[in-house]
Length: 486
Image (cartoon, rainbow, N blue to C red):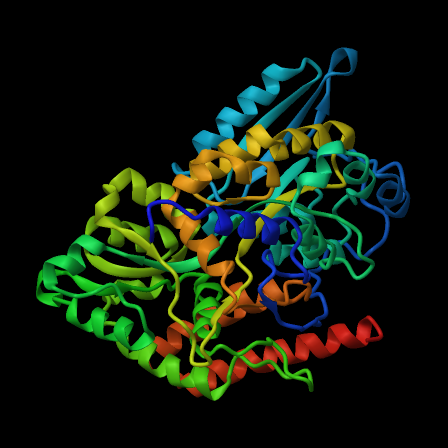
């Protein structure tokens, strides 16, 4: 990566970020079609679309007006003289993120007298379960930061307040990346806005450049070179492996990025509505990937969360990992700049840089919130240029306030520059992930990970693993199309 991005690239990247052409992609390089499906599994005692327990207004009236209810057990509380305390849940808490949230919340609380926001951090491994329990028991926080993959399911459960009236009258809203606003609206069949994305992480390859150099191994520029490098860097007797893979509940999210990057397949669903995850090219890759387990990876990788994977990389026991720009701050804390490098995935079999749209999270307001206007004040603050810049520079991700793109730190961040450089390429194509499917997060985070682990242990074939994945997505897509009359 050159030390300085050329002015032309900077202008191009800004154009892509500000005015991408297609829903579901952050940048204006190629975009797949694809729209999907799915019914919503409802637990006994969960929302069924009727009135909220303990609420004084019907759900329909509260959501239409943008006002929340405050049933027993709701998180927010109003004090004297109109003062209010609101709770905020972070779904990915940890030492690489929590201090920056705490600092921003401190700034917000000091900036005005009426609202006090209280932070609660939840580790990513248990966040989905905690949110689900809170939704089913009417004990949600006032404000939440959530994974976009959960959004459509929450919209279907009618537990969120639409944000349109707030966003549409917010002056700085014009600077929030319009393409991700479109993507957020895609979570709702009626196109309403229930979540605002504040940050995006782009999948890529992290390489311990120092370790590869010691062994005389080059930075992988092709998929063949990747597999060769992983093999050459492995010295199991010394506890050093060429690769560390993810095995936890998010393993298939990570894997999905890599499969489409390898194959170059442009659409998640074909013209007949069949999921392409089990394409022959993906089977080919998965067989080689499965063979890495417990030979060029540690045996414990089968349960790795990103924290264990990143720790192996930063500690020198793994030479290469697949993750996203979001771990940049952790690598920077543990290593010197010359020791590691963010590298884009190699060109696909079709000659393109093929990417599934990067992982994103965003803010939402739950309908238990007693003061949605106050909650929106907090979201405005967090998405302002100053706050969005501080947050994304600190965690090493891509900002959603386009004003931030002109700031020097964006040019100085190697991983961010690498991502923008590749995504601005004419060869780049983005595959839209069907996060609008109500069953998407269930399939990706609950159903598939046990199958992935069984596949690694050779208790299930690669073909069976990918076929079951494809069948679930195809069925969910068909149900969605039927329910929406598509």
